[in-house]
Amino acid sequence: MPPSALVIDDDVDIQLLGKMLLSRHGFDVATAGCLGELARQPGLLNTHLIVLDFGLGDFTGLDILDYLYDLKILAPILLLSSCSDETAAHAIAEGKAKGLKMLGFLPKAKLMTGLGDFIEQIEASPKPPSVGELAQAIKQQHICLALQPKLSLATGIVVGAEALVRWEDPTRGTIYPDSFIPLAEKSGLMVPLTWCILELAFAQLADWHARGLPLSIAVNVPAAFIKAENMLSMFDTLCGKYPIDMTKVTLELTESVGVECLGYARHILDELRKRGCKLALDDFGTGYSSLTQLYRLPFDELKLDRSFVSFIDSEPNAQAITLSIVELGARLGMSVVAEGIENAEQQTLLTKAKCPVGQGYFISRPLAPTQFEKWLGHQTMVA
Image (tube, rainbow, N blue to C red; front, side, top):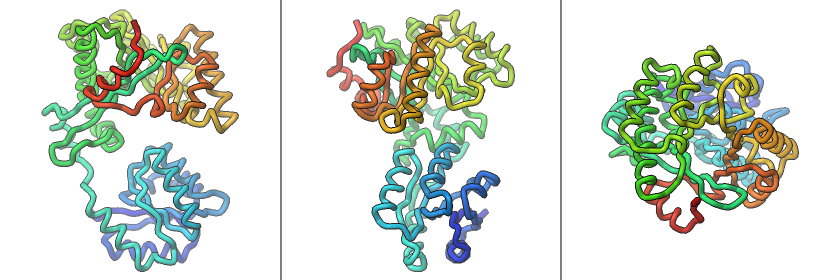
């Protein structure tokens, strides 16, 4: 099956020219003219390459990039436009900041001669991993942790870390989660991957405790894990392998968990709390079911989504929502963790709002365990 491409441009002539040129390079090409068309046909975005115009009538390429970010699109994006180099550079920087794969900028005037260079760049890049390769990586223990520190905003004390995941492939090198988590979700590998991450996290926590470091660790768990058959008995078996204080374990659940059957989800989550675990509602405020889950499921912590935190210093509405969630957490007797802190002003605003805990690149990027240990040596530790 040939690779696919999508040309997003409201100029029909550019659509046809892009389609012709990409077809010559072996692509099966679709076109779209506006954001509304993509909203009506999101399946168009299941593609290997997106060629995006910056000016699209009532919307811009930035609006499209926001939409691609929301959908967690992994396809590389080539900005094709008549805009200035400065505008293009801003759009590319915005896309990269969201984690999108921005190939670069090609002025429309150079479409005929310059497209081939970008196609060569795509063809030279490593092929995405397959389901079989991911299954083998889990089996052969090529999965490892990256630890992002969590800080008490009131005291500046390090209280723990969130355990993020990396795939260390012998040939490709480090593979980041945006390249394999969607694959795991679609292939049924999220449950074995989660068990792998949990075991690594428990082993790390046991090592910290053995050395007298009173840190906590947080692990993301998906809906499929909560619903998995024999999950509680397998969890008990795993806990039995590691002499850890389970009150130092936080399981972070996304807002989709338990929507189909809140009664069953509550039973499982109550059992996990009986074992000492704390439970966090991740990405709070980004899903329609937040408030329902908040009072029907036994959470101890709210995680403020980065989509709010990243704009509290520039967008009044984002700041208002963020401060309201911090207050809501306090009223409910829950801790609140703000993720995605990117600068000092954001951290100061959250500290003044009495948000208990923060994490983000301003505090520290995710670190390999050995790097985390070095970073930790220069920080204030909780007693």
